[in-house]
Amino acid sequence: MQDEYVSTEHMFLGLADSSESKRLIQFGLSPDPSNNLEPMLRSNAMTTQTKTPLHPNPPPLIRISGAHREMGRQIGEVCRKQVTHSIESARQLLAESYVQLELTWEGARIHAHKYLPFAQAHYPQYVQEMIGIAEGANVSFDEVVVVNTIEALTDDALQLTHCTSFAVNDDHTANGHVLLAHNEDWVPEDENDVFIVHATPKNECPFLAMSYGCLLPNVGFNAYGIAQLCDSVYPNDSGIGIQRIVVARAVLASERLDKAIHYMLTAQRAAGYNHLLAHESGELYSVEVSARHFAILYGEEGYIVHTNHYLAPAMQKIERKPEDLIGSRVR
Amino acid sequence: MNEHQFCRVGRLFLEDINNLEKFTQESREALLAAQHLVRDFQHQVVEPIYLLLALIQQHAGIVRAIITKVSGGTQAIQEELSNELGSRP
Picture 1 (cartoon, rainbow over the protein chains, first blue to last red):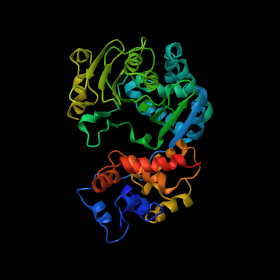
Picture 2 (picture 1 turned 60 degrees about the vertical axis):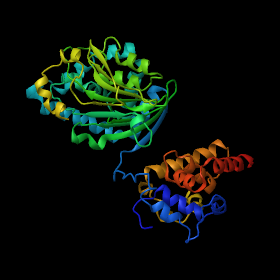
Picture 3 (picture 1 turned 180 degrees about the vertical axis):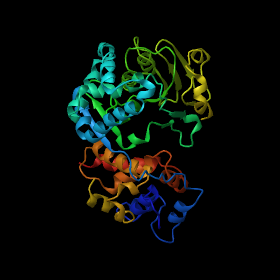
Picture 4 (picture 1 turned 90 degrees about the vertical axis):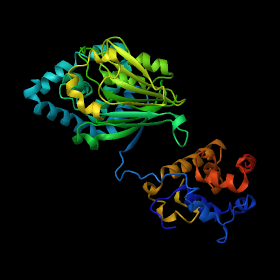
């Protein structure tokens, strides 16, 4: 076999040539070249698995555990370069957008702190994670807060995110799995800041999530079979409150779907995402959230798709400048 | 799982053993599942039998499909493998 990837077929052929060969013969599978094992494996009819090509430079996987501040510190230490770069990138973004936003970096630091008491009141554990990230990466906590508040600080005027999310449940996939996909369409300058975090918090459930720089993890799934994908939406009722990324971080700690939605709708939230929510049982939801409104859409046909515009009529009424979201509708 | 342990599994992926990027997702999952089986049976060393059982337990996997086609099912071989592993100290 001259193949590019090592598949389970190769492994099985290797086993047929190992100490397990006797057992395989017993069950009718011989490693003898005259046997049809290899042709059978090669047969298109039998080849059910996909040789999944892997990214040549996949994002690093980091493992963190412990109390929230300690987990943040571990992220900061391991991803110091990414954390530092994400802060510099945000600083540059604001500088380049000054004509439009009239917001300096110093102004952003001051303004971001207005959101902090709300996060502290509802989710102090995630404020601790931000403190830990700052400590681990040896950067200013204020700057970590700015990056975690950047969408609100820019009042979403820059519309930088063009994320797309979809999910298909187990009734409609070839392998019977619930599948989710998310395109995190943020600025390309931050691509190298992406990492995957496998977290085992001391007092919450384990999760696997994507993050970048000093952002709190939010797109991912947890040990209770709950997955979340986040898409930016642009309502007209945003205000000062809990940063939406803090709310999304809380969802990763949900043990049940109803609790996940409860977190998404936390009082005093500053704004909201569309949270595409999936459970391993195949239940799929899009929870469209703003600061004061929400709508829950159910994936009745076994799949659900969302981009950056509201789908529920009630939410469309509060969508700011829907004419700017043509690209989202096309997607 | 170290290189020596991998080597005992078979000759076909020896040359790639230091490059896990060359493994398909299913292959990685099988290796991980084999490691978990070792842990579950409270054993110390990964051997081919664990990998065989892990491959058979992949519900949508090619190995399960092959054995089902040849032997009519995987229950018998799974039971035999589990019994043998369970009887080991």
